[in-house]
Length: 197
Image (cartoon, rainbow, N blue to C red; front, side, top):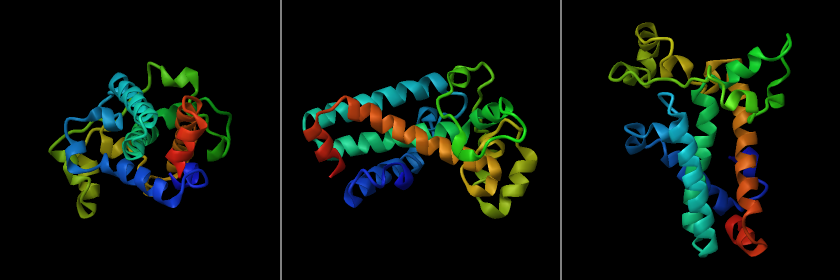
């Protein structure tokens, strides 16, 4: 969020976006909300959720409700960013590149040949075993018992996941900018000023 929008939003505005973004990972957002995270191959639901949050952002800006706009946009960015961290998009993109592949900042976050690719998959959540992955001392054990298509095996949520994390990170930064530009294109200069102040 800071890399994508830190020079656009005020510190207070950015903090509000980040709080809403991180709020998607609270306990309520972890169960029954695959669309928040593009988990369990919930691509159609995730895309619909992005569209819903984008519209909520615009509606709030048009009525002058800046806190609601920032909350909706923060939620939107979480979902957009998780697309890269929770799916095999990075793997599919790397498979289409020459060897050696380009550096991580070169990744195209909206490659039309990949967004709708039939091979696109996201990690499945195999509860209760999946919960073990979130306890660091049990992580290796969890990985040993979970299928390869599990969230535990597929996620690129941190640098601990290796080089592919860098590609997911840069894709997420670029997608966050793209999402902001979509909102910017649909609002007035006054609304933009209030949103980013």
